[in-house]
Every structure is written in C-alpha cells, then in structure tokens.
Image (cartoon, rainbow, N blue to C red):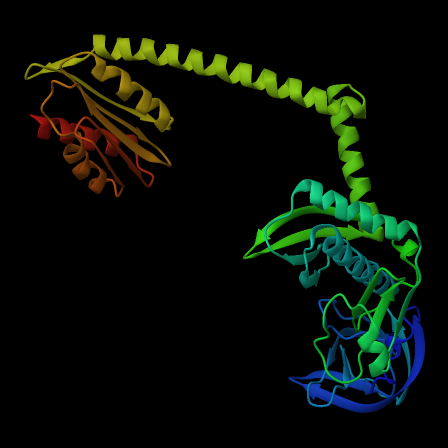
Amino acid sequence: MTNNRRYYFDSYTRAFSARLVERVSLAARPAVVLDATYFYPASGGQPADLGAINGVPVVDVTLRESDGAILHWLTAEVADDEVSCEIDWPRRWDHMQQHTGQHILSQACLRTAEAETVSFHLGADGVSIDLAGPPLSPAALARAEDLANDIVQRNLEIKAWFPVEAELRALPLRREPKVKGAIRIVAIGDFDFTACGGTHVAHTGELGLIKILGATKAGKDTRVEFLCGARAQRDYHRKHTLAAQIAAGFSVGLDEVESALARLRAENQDLRRALNTAKAQLLDAEAAELLAAASIQNGLRLIRRAWLDRDPAELRGLAERLPKTSGVLALLGTAGEKTHLVFARSADVPHNMGALIKPALTTLGGRGGGSPTLAQGGGSSSTLEAVERVLAAAQESAG
C-alpha cells in the first residue's frame, strides 16, 4: 500500500498516468481507486489534493478505513480504465509550503520556548498550530519566528523516507509517532525529525518566509497563527498597501505613521474631553430649564417628559441632575426603536422609584429596576404616545 502512495516519495509530480482498479459509489457520489496515485488524501491536518482524472474534477481524496485504499471522489463517472491524472498544482504547492513551515515553526517553538505542538490546522486562508501551555509572550514568539526564518535562509535539504526499526530508534524525533508499522520520517537537515505522511518542499529556501500573525488562548493551549511562502507574501503585500494608504492619508512617510497615529489618538482624546464637557454643560442648562418649567403636584416639583429617539445616557444625565434640587420627582422616557425610562427623585421625596417604574416597564414590554431614588429600564420599540401614556400613569400613581 505504501508503494501505491507515490506522493510519499515525490511531492512535485503534477500529472501522471494510472490504471483504475476499483469503482465506488456512495450516496450517488462516484469515486475510483487507482493502482498508484500522487493525489494526497486529507489527513494529519493537511487538506486533500484536488485536480482531475480524465478531465473529470476530483473534489475530494480520502482514505478508506477498512483497507487504507485511497478514494478519489469525482463529479461524474470515469469510463476508461487507463486514465490521465492532473493535480491542482497551485493548491498542492501552497499546502507543501504551509506544512513544511509548520514543521520548522513547531521545532522553533520547542527550542526557544519549550512549547510542544499538539495539533496543526491548515485551512483555505489560515494556518495554525496549537502549543501546549499558556500563551507565549511577543518576545518569545519573535524568537521562534527568527529561528524559523534562519532555517529557511539556510536552505536546508528536506528528505522523507521509511527508516528501518534500528535507524528509527536512533533518530531524535520531535514527538513519538502515533501510528504503528512502517513510519515515514520527514527530516529538515539536522534541525527537525518528525513522523509525517504529508507533502513537503525539497529545500527550506523554497518557503521564502514564515510569518507569525499572532497567538490566542485555545482552551488550555495556545493557538499560533502563521503564514508561509506565497501566503505570507500576499499578506505582506496587502498590509504594505494598507500602510501606504494610511501614510498617504496622513501625508507622511511610512516611518512616520506611528507618530501620526499617536498624534491622532491624543487629538481624539482632547476632542472627547471637550465634547463631554460641552454635553455636560448642555445637560446642566436643560435641567435648569426643566426645573423652571416643572409643575407643582402635592407640593412636589413634577417633571414629566418624553422624547423620540433620544440617547438613554442623556436621560440618565438629566435624572442625576434634577433631584439635586429638593422636592423633585422626574419621570423621563424616550421612544423609538429602543424604549427607555428613567425615574428619579430628590432625597426628601418619599416615593420608591424602583416600585414606581415596574408597571410602566411591564406595559411597554421592558425590563429594569433600580433603587428607591433612581430606577431605569428599557424594552422593545414603542411610539412616543405609548411612552407618554405610561409616564402619565406613573404620575397618577405617585399621587
């Protein structure tokens, strides 16, 4: 079976001839088994090769568990037994670069941070390894990346073979093999020795670049996202273009973008402070106007007011200002897509705002609560008329 898997010994063949030895159909999906194949089946974190057999698209390649046969899943039946096969080379080359880069980066993380790789994922856009243990610091990630790219620049030879048992025991494997029987070893110079069935480049220089994008916590492990080769190059091009656009927007050079952003942040903070001061002054003035126009009810200065689509934070600001004057009961609300009510009273007013607001919120289908002096809550959309009605009902309950 090993001899039938030609990709084990040659990752660079793009087209080949083969003989069809079995036809399979599952749920109306046709598949074929070839006497020998260079198509890689999905396994070990690496996706399957795609391509065509006699011009019929190969949409997946899998291993049959019962006997280890490689199934080439097709979009249609293939009539001939002697077939011409073609592998989607850009996809294969990309996978070779990413998978080889994973071996190098995993060994680099082990050497620089004693962080062992526990899993590998190669997707259409992203590539990641999960390292055992807590997240690595930016400095630790930088050390691992530097070592990985040093290996790339040394252009070490990469070879794959099936060593005999005595030779296998003598190899400094990065991790113990998970399979029994014949073990395929991928060696990157004398830097890394790993049991692996995937496809890889022949020399580390073919990767060009390994770039770590970041690290996040993944359960009890650390997920490190990275890109290799053409993916890293495209990422650099995209980010360089974006950085150039930002620099042009600031009318500065690329090396001045960081200081320009720092100035923008400082200016933004100053503007926010000025805006907050202006908003506070406006709320002070509005609170004074509402107090001046307040009606008198049973000796209380009653302020009942509803707005359409007003920021609930502004209602809260008014509700905090109005009760600073004695004898004030404020019933405030905003209608629209988001309904919000705020009830507040002065310290010398006996009513419980938490109890007073509950019927109003229930009527509007909302939720909330608060203290005896200030309560608030919101609900689904409502009309201005509906909010005004619940405020009037609350006023009546307050007596």
